[in-house]
Image (cartoon, rainbow, N blue to C red; front, side, top):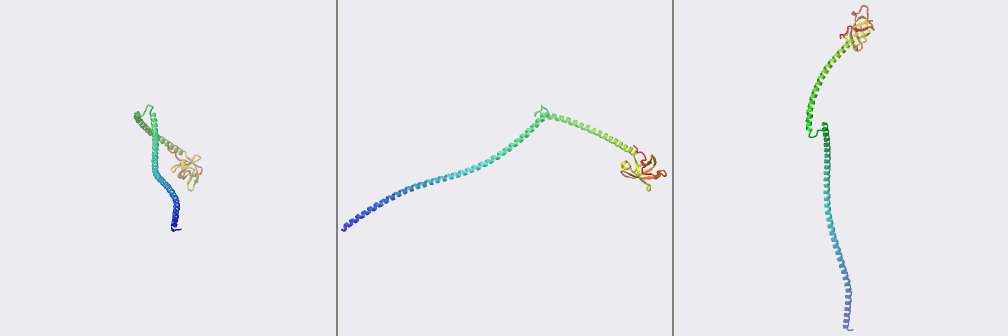
Length: 271
């Protein structure tokens, strides 16, 4: 084969190879192009989704920010309402206290009104608030009259008391004189008994003393069977017995005093 034919054959081979290469790569390029388009489309979808998500995120962030702002406003509103509620509670308590005070004052006024009504009723059915001053003036006049009457009664009572006191003093004097007279009369009738005699020492013991009216100044005589036998002088007077000295000069010769002899006052006491 000639060189020219070889070159022509080689050219044909090269052209065929080029066509084959072109065909092969053209198919691959189509696939690549399809893949790229699909990828671009996917990227576009993804980018859209991202943009949508970013928009949603921005909206959510704005909503959260708005919610936070509203929460702060709500908290402030709640705090304000609580403060107002506390103030209203205090005002309500003050009002209740004021109402209670007013009720108490009203009760006092009603009681006073009832008392005034009772007083007016006691003063007379025709007495009213308007006529009360005149009635009070009338009562004052009556009071002055009554005070004068009371003063006069007090003077009469004082005078009567003076008379009663004077009469009582006179009566007490009469009673005292009677008691003294009765006592003197009783002493005039005093009589007792000799209970012991000491002839050696010249004294005797009488069974009566100060309780019976005996005194150191009493003059005593001794009797036996109603007959005078001598005198004795009290030397020691005790409540229930008297020790007396025997006056031997007053006794008859040979007579001795002895237990059982009677002792009486030597002279009656003046009435």
